[in-house]
Image 1 (tube, one colour):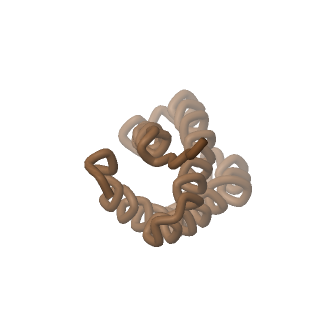
Image 2: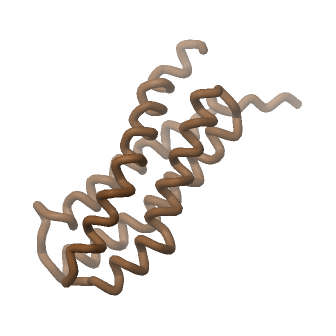
Length: 129
């Protein structure tokens, strides 16, 4: 891998570890009860767990240096961003816990945005015309 691929292995390992740790953390948030219990259960089943599983599979593709790993990473990051950002904003407004789950959700959204920008870089696409 050339110099344009700086950060590839670091983000691949970070993605695998963070997505693996996200699965029990999501269960913890769901099991924590009110507030937003219905929203927590709904988001966990419909978006959070599927995004984590997709991220784990994407990491496998990235470790194997397959182009589909990059595509799947973009999908997983987009799924996560589409859930964490609105959830963090709504939870912050309703619960006002900036230094709790709301703040963590917004931090995760920001980190996912940065990772999304990284994986969308031209160096990760090998297009031959």
